[in-house]
Image (cartoon, rainbow, N blue to C red; front, side, top):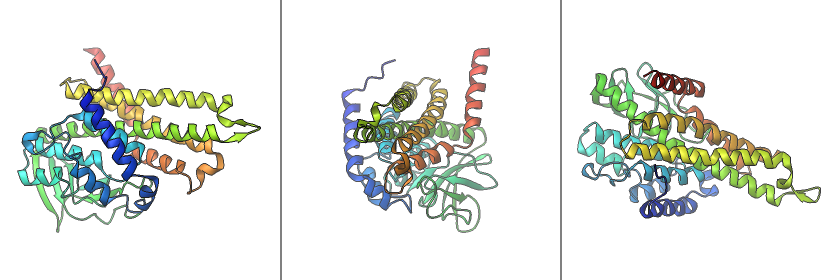
Length: 343
């Protein structure tokens, strides 16, 4: 396994790092905080082909892979981008894989319609707490034994306005009047397509969490280096050096396991789905640890709205919970590992 980036992959990483640094500054994030969506940034990413990066060229996408998507997600995570990049990219690939009408695929790939994946199965005809659910025009979800694409408004259970991680989270009804419902697949095929998309979402979101953790750590280190107490930088105190070192190792690990999962996916290895689950569980946990440490290093300042530490902590906690109970995911990973060992 070679996780060294190719020249083309480095170009992708550098290009999108510049874009997010420029177009997802702290000021832009704060301006989009109430809605959880930055339309100008969305338009920029759509124009660069980011939404269709992992969609085959024959289906109208950019023809790249999930390594490229992971690199873009890392850059987005570092800057707390207020766009549903992963949810939209995975939904676009799912529509292509399901053989959806070309017009629906094109609208998702081009960003003409914000179309996102619901990362959890629907309950009683409602996709619960969908990232970007309050701004998306279309949601792809598993509703019972049907994989559906539903266009329509958010339901009364929507978490409209401000939410914990400023990700425009909302409930989305999948049945009822005023909804345009397309059945993409049914039965075993529907479940298989959705699980694959869910695992791809885990993969991409893990990369985003790795980027968030890395930036939260950088912010903490910069503050610890510049803040003096008792005549010395607080970063020179062992009480901070040890946790900073621990998080640095965990953040490096999060980046590597996310990239490994993407590499396994793009090389057609069946183990990629299990690797994606581990990557998401570890990276999401690490993002929360890094953000909590960042806030701790800032002391009382970290709790104030004027500092960015609280932004990173809120996004990290919300993202970790977006797939449901984290303990259940670790149980799923453990059960899969035990089952693999039994064969």
